[in-house]
Length: 223
Image (cartoon, rainbow, N blue to C red; front, side, top):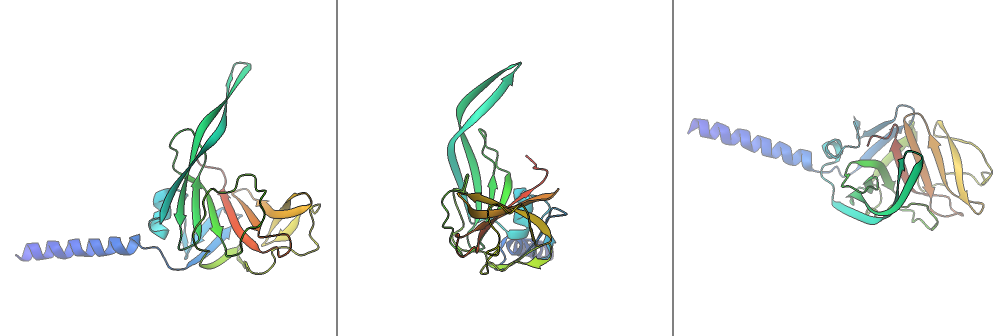
């Protein structure tokens, strides 16, 4: 009886610990270091964009969506190139309560590993000319604090000043260099690419210039 009691106690502790680890945090302290290519969540480094490493820090995702579309597949054979339109798909791992999204690349095969990380804010995106916007987004905005290279981001303040225009070549922000992305003279985002991380800040509209969402790519891209 004593042995059974000990075994039951061990099983209970393991079950309780597993439940604790599987719960998502209520708020996030997110720190991005573009020089090191480092993402820290509540003080812990996200080792990679593997699902296991994501779950270790955030718990299981709330939702998995699969987006299917058409893509062009090209293949070289000697000096000739063939090109076909094929079915491709991308996997979206959504943390609806935290405002976070992880997305895999579009592929002909079930390639489920995320290669992009998104953070969504409450400022609704009003631009409608993004080249490849995410097919899904979290149900609620980001909850917590965010910094880039140890400088806090204030999403409700304008990200860029009115003196910045579409011909501006370089913008020094958050201890790195951004360049504007524009269509028809309107800046819709600013982009920075260091050796280990690429980051794009998308504005909500041309007038307010508040932060709508951020996309993060780790370099080199690990497929």
